[in-house]
Amino acid sequence: MAAGEKLVYTGRKRNASHNWMKLPVVGVAAADAEAYAAWLSASGRLPGARLCTEQEWERAARGGDLRSYPHANALRPADANFDESYAKDPLAMGPDEVGSHPASRSPYGLDDMAGNVFEWTRSSVDPTGRAARGGSFYFDVNSARVAARETPEASFRDVSVGLRVCADPPPR
Figure 1 (cartoon, rainbow, N blue to C red):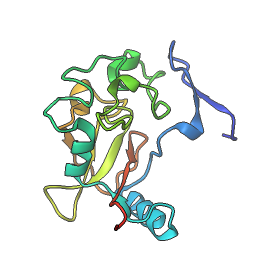
Figure 2 (figure 1 turned 30 degrees about the vertical axis):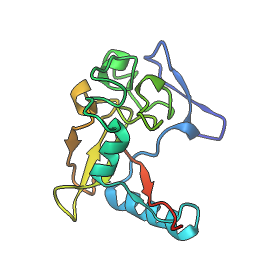
Figure 3 (figure 1 turned 30 degrees about the horizontal axis):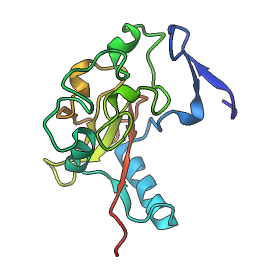
Figure 4 (figure 1 turned 180 degrees about the vertical axis):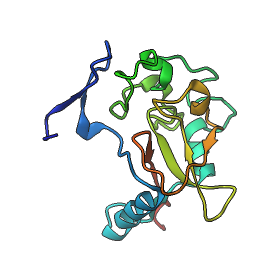
């Protein structure tokens, strides 16, 4: 697609047209996500950039309490992009522009911490492993719970998996 062209989901009545340049980055394996974060750091665009650890991701998603989803203890179809958001219609399923569902914004103001696309993180169980967090447009409401985690093969590339970058604050 050329800049300015819209991605259109023919099976949707709402959120049908998207600026593809505002969609999350998807289809990246864990090593691709790591390489991108390393490039961001080395380029100086975001010094210290790296994949988030699962603990960092979870804290950013839920804040300081034990809520089930970034905004509350329940998730309605209009709150985030998961399988029920567009009635499980295959012609309607796919990523939305980042921030399309402000109802599920995290307490820290982060968009799409529930649904849209899973995000690669560094595993809290296996120091050399990766986990995917946050749920996806293709999966059910339970996969979008803050505590939910998936462990796809590190080489897995799919439109349902993307990344989020963390960085340490600069030294004072």
